[in-house]
Structure formats: C-alpha cells, structure tokens
Amino acid sequence: MAAYDDNNVFAKILRGEIPNETVYEDEHVLSFKDINPQAPTHVLVIPKGRYVSSDDFFNEASDAEIAAFFRAVGKIARQLGIVESGYRILANCGRDANQEVPHFHLHIFAGRHLGPMLANTGGA
Ligand code: AMP
Image (cartoon, rainbow, N blue to C red):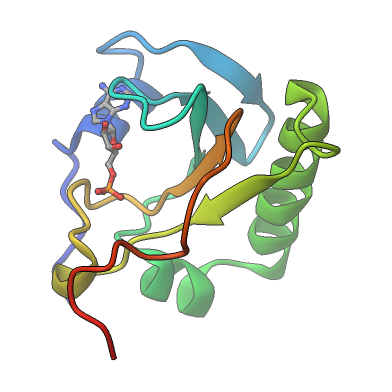
C-alpha cells in the first residue's frame, strides 16, 4: 500500500489550507460537502488521522477512532434530516473502485431516489 501523501486534498482541508463547507466536526472526524455533488445531499466524512484508504483505516486506526467515525456518520445523517427518506453510504478503496483522493473518506448520498447499487456497466 502506498504511503500517506500529506499533499492530498483532504490533508490540505484538515490543515485549513483550502476551504470546505463543514457540516460536522469533532475530535476525530470532519465532514464537509462534496465539491462535485452527485445527489441533492452529498457529503464526505473523513477521519482526522492519516489513513490512505478504508483498508488502512479498518486495520490501523484505534478502536476509539473507528467508533468515533461511525458514531459521527450516524449523527451526521440525523443532523441532515435524511434518516427517514433514506441515504446511501459508500467508500471507494483502490484502483477498481476509482478512489481519487488517497485519504480515507466515506460518501453520504441522499435527497433523491438513488437508483441501483452500481451502474450497470459490467456485471458480475
Ligand atoms: P473518491 O473517488 O471516492 O476518492 O471521491 C473523492 C471525492 O472528493 C469526489 O466526490 C470529489 O468531488 C471530492 N472532492 C475533491 N476535492 C474536493 C474538495 N476540495 N472539497 C470537497 N470535495 C472534494
């Protein structure tokens, strides 16, 4: 696995070097609006720790960081008012998933019917 790149865009957001539209922040977690939204609600949730991907986070983060992360996702969904209508969470990991930013992040999509789970461009 590649080493963490401190120049990735989310590292710059965490250092305050580029702006973001924050929707939630605590000791371990930052959540902000995606700059190129794919749904009426599209936010990203990132740990403040230096984790390249979901694989890195799930294997290397502390129990406290992992618990804080998923608790935060639940709080954010409630805060956004999307629990009743529904939402989708998604994490791209690595090449086949087209992960663009090498800092672990989870997408939250909501605000319209989100269609099938995957685009029908390949199949099993
Ligand atoms: P992924 O393909 O899962 O790595 O998704 C990366 C996401 O980061 C994309 O949905 C981008 O639109 C989003 N993104 C990239 N730069 C920024 C930024 N400066 N602020 C907010 N979202 C960003």
